[in-house]
Image (cartoon, rainbow, N blue to C red; front, side):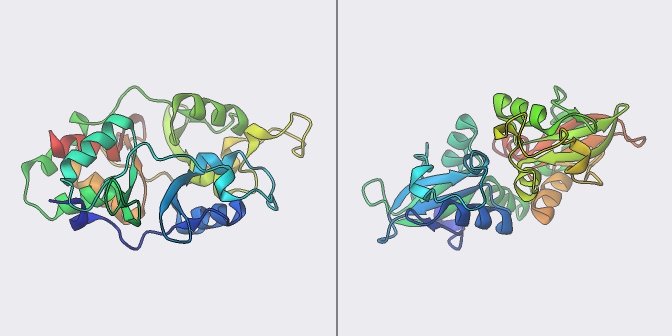
Length: 261
């Protein structure tokens, strides 16, 4: 399986001279985590992420995309083995990688994401898809509560390089907080506001978290989680027992690790 077999050639992009506020709108409206940045010749210049947009508090900022974009840590070419690219993605903790014509020709072609690799495997008959989630879920969890302040949780997410976390109340799963929630909210950038800023009181997680939480049970399979992630466009699924107690979490990296080992 080559990169060209699974790459998304219709993945959106943005030009370097466009306003960062437009990039924010594209990320929000399309539910994207990353956006490739190109020049007028469609040559890849960089990428812009949700985290980059969190640093801009103004909805009318004159900042251009090229002012906040970063250099991608990894790119792929169409004829490269997809499995080898995905292994590198896991090593770098990257969920998306831009695809360019060649190492010398940086013409942007599309994007390869972990979900593209997962979707390809779902079409195959493999025993790995029947593995129960209890065997692959992460149990060392970063969680927050409904009464935590968004500002503090966002700072912790940044420090730990997490893009989401389960929300619990009395040990039970009640919701999920993600970067997408923060970006979609009118209170999307709390970590960059002054304590004497525009909020009269600290914003609580309960006001922006996604409810109800989409979850699975420990007895569900890798296939169940993979299909749910692709159908709902989510990156992680909390695992809870029948009484709602949070037991673990499975993300796209966990699924891919199972498929390639």
